[in-house]
Amino acid sequence: MTLWMVRAGSAGEHMERFLDWNRVYLTWSDLASDLIQIKDPEAMQELLRAPYPQAPPGRIRQNSGQIWAFTREMKIGD
Image 1 (tube, rainbow, N blue to C red):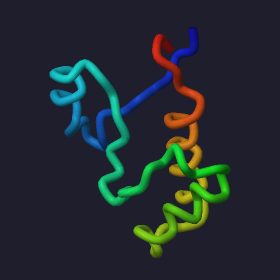
Image 2 (cartoon, helix red, strand yellow; image 1 turned 120 degrees about the vertical axis):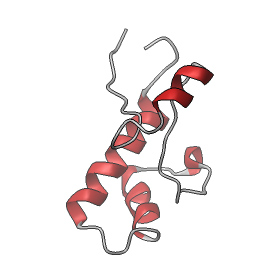
Image 3 (cartoon, rainbow, N blue to C red; image 1 turned 135 degrees about the horizontal axis):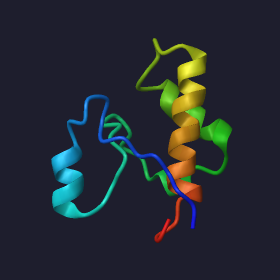
């Protein structure tokens, strides 16, 4: 079993919904794409650049890495 840290928003604003629905999910509201269709981490970074053009490159890399892990590495039971 792998352990993951999943935050319920920057200030815990999604915590009640996570608990009520008994699940965690991505909270980037500007990602309206089917993320499983993204083929590699670089494409995930490109996807994030469109809705967040002012974000520094380091933030894009960090956030895309988090999204990639959530969509590709995290498994039921972790």
